Structures are given as structure tokens and as C-alpha cells.
Amino acid sequence: MLSGRTTLSKFVIEHTRGQHSELGALLVDVAAAVKSISALVGKGALSGFAGLAAATNVQGEAQKKIDVLANEAILSHCEWGGQLAGMVSEEMEAAYRIPDDYPRGRYLLLFDPLDGSSNSDVNVSVGSIFSILSRPAAGDAADADFLRPGSEQVAAGYAIYGPATMLVLSVGSGTHGFTLDRESGNFILTHPDIRVPAETREFAINTSNERFWEAPVQRYVAECKAGRSGVRGVDFNMRWIASMVAEVHRILMRGGIFMYPKDHRDPARPGRLRLLYEANPMAMLIEQAGGAASTGRGRILDVEPETLHQRVPVILGSRDEVERVERYHREFDTGTDRPFVSPLFAERSLFRD
Image (cartoon, rainbow, N blue to C red; front, top):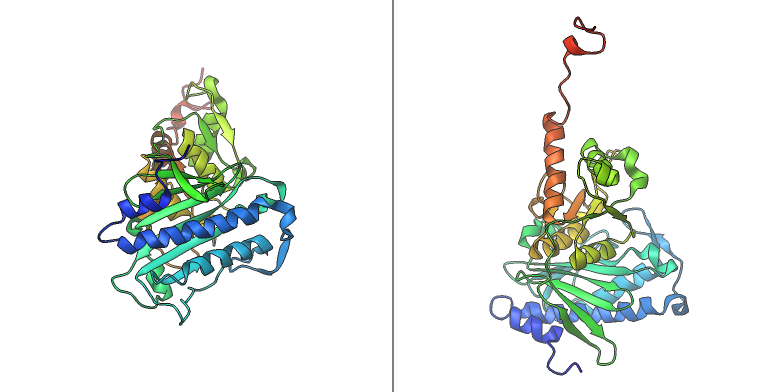
């Protein structure tokens, strides 16, 4: 039945010939790591790896055992091939140095090994996210080599571990989805050239944080919730899975807008999602599919990273809705969202009847 279908290996070879010829081999290694993580996640409680590890990650968050194992899976599958100068992970404080036994390449791999891992205990979809940059020459990478804007990514993607395991990928020529055929062990191209509808009637945000949001986001969500009776004149549906991979996958499949905006809970953290491991790769995938990705005040892919674990606000999805939220931020910042009030015509004015 799958005879003649395009495999991931064939796809990346065809799309990375020439300047990025070694990129195809690296993506095949990433896919092998994804298969290992998929098998681990698919066992659920039977794996024996449920619960917390005896450590926290660099962000001070408690690591789950499965986070650690997923991180090790990507390191071990990708370190040996000779394509990489180094790797960084959400789970590691500093850049990972390629072991001396292996050759160095010119690519840099940045990844979140298991996004939404808190959902694994309740059998909800989780995923892995990755980004690839290139250096001018092969050699050992330093932390500073990874601090490049997302517009310089040569590839990005994610895997989603749900009823089926899918790998969604861009090498700069559109966004494409591959489904793992468990019988053959191959990823098969099933969703070529994914396009995000420009309009949507679906939004995803954690409304329990509403009291911390800035006014532009409160305004947008209030309009969506007002539905047909409000200024938008149409009803919206709200979704929230608490797994960025699952949220973005839904948007790529049928449209929508995902928001994890700036809030006032912690002034030291202007955003909640990591720029290098989450925001940049997802922004590339969404833009390559015709959508938009913004901090609310600018394009995510233009943000200049300052630290490996920098966080940013994230608003991405259907272009028209993202641009509306950006407009609300501009109007708020310039004060044009606030109606003019004249003291002469207030309730207690000189002209009161």
C-alpha cells in the first residue's frame, strides 16, 4: 500500500542536495531519535519511567524521568555522525560538546526533547521540537554560536506522539508532515506543503492567567469570547492542551491562533516559552506554512537571542488573527486604543441637563 510513497529519507536527500548535503544525514539521525522516543512514550506506565527524576533543569523545573531519557536519546543518535559542531537542549545548562571520538561538522542542533511532558502521565499528546543552524566551518561550538536569530535556521521541526507519530519538518521550502509507518519503520510523506488558513474561528490560550495579561491580549480574548454578540460578529471556540506541539499541530492541520503572551507574574520573565527551543522552530514552521508568528510587538524570527534559555512571548497561527493582535499591541502602546473622554461632556459637566 505504501509502495511509491515518498519516505523522509528520500525527501531530505532531494531537498538538501548541494549546499546543505550533510543536512539530510542529520535529519535522518533526528528521525531515528524520534522513533526511539516514540517507542518509549508509547509504553506509558509500562515503561517504568513515570514520575520525577532526582534533579531539576536549568530553569529550576522538576525533570521527569522521561525528559532525561528523551534528552539522552537525541544526544546519542545525533552526536556520532560528523555533521554537528555542538548541541544545546532545554534540559542542559550549557552547550553539549561532541565527544572526542567523533568527527565535527558545521551544524548546530537545538532541541526541547519532550515538550509537554507533564501530559505524559495522563496519556495526552506530547512531542519533541528541534532547530538547526549552520556555522561557516566545522569545529567545536561555543555557547555564543547558538545565539542567532531564528531567521537563520536552515531547518526546523517537531515530532508529535499521539495516536500516530508524526514528524513535521521545514528545510526552507514549505512545511511538510510525515507519518511513522510502524510496520516498515519509515516516516512517509502524508501532508505535503501544509498551509495555515489566513482566517480562523479558534483560539488557544490559558485563560487562568487572564489577570496577568496585558490589555491588548485581554481585549482580543474578550472579543473572541463575546462571539456573535460582540464586535467580531462571529462565534469562536477555545482550545488549550498545555502542550505546544499539540497546539501548533492542530493549527497547522486546520488553522487557529496560539497565544502564550507576556504577563506580569514575574518581571524577570517577559515571556514563558523558550526562544531557541520552542518559539524559533515553531515560528519557522508556521511562516513556511503561510501563517505568522509574533511576540506581539515584532516577528519572532527577528529576535536577537541574548542567552541560551531566553524566554519570549509567543503569538502564532493564522495570519489575519496574529496581525490583529499585533495591531492591538500597537494601539495600546500608542494610547490609541483608549477612547477620548472630554471633561466638558462627562456626567458632571458644564453642559449637563
